[in-house]
Image (cartoon, rainbow, N blue to C red):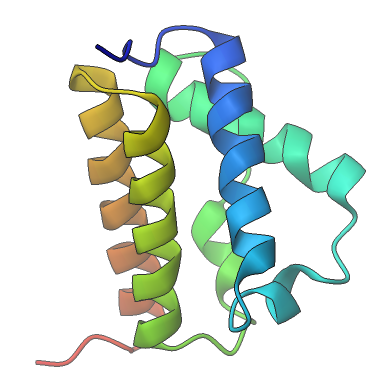
Length: 119
């Protein structure tokens, strides 16, 4: 049986493996290919520790960070599929389920702000 997400090390594994999968994606890779990974990965780890482990300190607006990107619903779907798959590969339990729910809600929020959601 897999363990639930409980520690900062679990978040490190989730974020590192997720972005490794993103970089294998033909459609998602271009959005990340010029990213400064040394700066980005610690921010994403801090974000998910804030979301899942209630660690204080993350103050950036994740939605605003994405509004300038030319994203589509299909790209959001792929991002979410990869995220869910990465969670399921390593973890199971209430926090793992929360991670998938929060990722889905974040995606919907960004899609809404980008006017990508259909009536």
